Length: 269
Image (cartoon, rainbow, N blue to C red; front, side):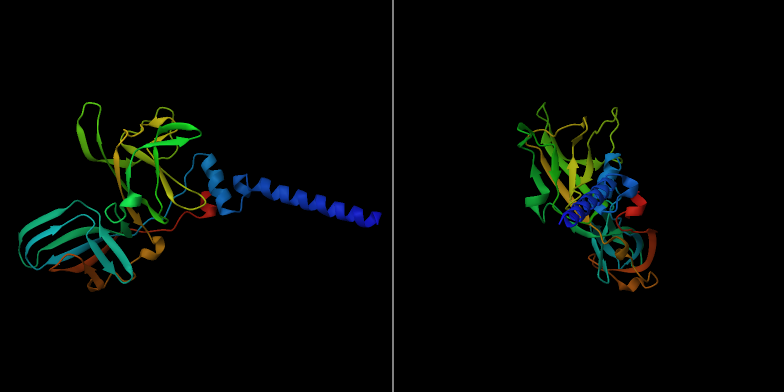
């Protein structure tokens, strides 16, 4: 009985040691194996992983002639993939038949604040955090697979002088690791929830930036991405591209930049 008890205790201690060693390894970036641990360890060094990146193409479109309005986010499809024109609105008057124009498109699925106002239209209000009542300084976005630069933010507010600022664009900051002397002027920082993979945008982070004025209306557009699966397999067949723009056909497809999936564990390390 003593021998059996001794063996049981030795086994228990050995298991606890192994379990403790595994858990400690997950706290050390080079030895971590779990995805969530790797992303968390990297974040402790101020490193945010690269998210999915969309394929970008230049499409040459031949016009039948007449007047054309090509708004931003005009939709193009090729096979099972969707692409959107990402430039400013184009207006073309009295185009001759056969006139060719170029539009740059980006793969993804668009969700705008007009499509989903409950999630993508937010009015800045008070909220309680750590038992402290303060003005909301971040917004959670309930979408996964959001493209690396697939968040577009516009703020409408009235400043302290009573002047209306309508749909002022806030751009994504290049780095999520904010230096002490950095300033986030009309910028936001994207930091994704590690467990759920959904983005959170911060207007103020690590002491930099400004909390939006109470009552500010924040309008958000989201582009989700297929990453490496968003490729046009055969660019020699432009006729396979269909467009939401009437009276024009695609005559040429040119690759601008490759898409890719979320950064791998080894690459993060």
